[in-house]
Image (cartoon, rainbow, N blue to C red; front, side, top):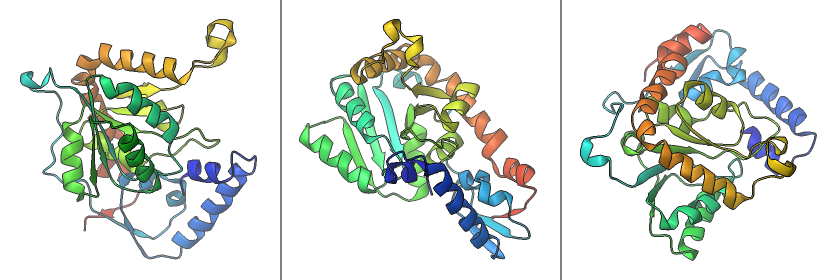
Length: 272
């Protein structure tokens, strides 16, 4: 149901918004006929189909309590490479072209990348890394949720690589799960995730500025964009490894925790 996937399927057609609206209405109608609904991620609590549910008990197992948020790095970790992780599947909803350029640019820099999950996009990224012999990238495949969150908690940044879309209000599992272990995020483009990252200062945004903001009304090339972005990460690394982690967890607690969901939706969630 990612709007970015529908946008990719329709090649950015003006019908994208209409199509997504019809699908959303169809899904809401199906959901409303249920008496119980198992929810796999707190991000879905805030999807619009849930707003119309009446008398439906939502069953959810919240993030494992034994995965504690890390609000800073130990002193011996400060010299570590910049550790970036991607948790969740990759596919047509994600900007794989920009991700490949970012991986290639950071291949010779002090970066390490970890990928958890699968999907058609993951196969493409695996092939790309193999082709270019990128040694700083590790693929874990599918992992149990608790193991995935442990890895994420040890990363400096978690990747949320949405592609540009006419509809950009999606809050995804990888974003919420990263916040739950106090890991700041890298958000691609301008969308709902980037708005929250900017408001709460809990990560960094990789986005091309509007042409009108640049000299001679030009757009940055991909290389220029990524170069400036990498410099920005390096200059803010101390902040990203400390204060940004606290901000990420604060956002999770205030917007995506069980108590926040119950307050927002007026529903009781049964842990299973």
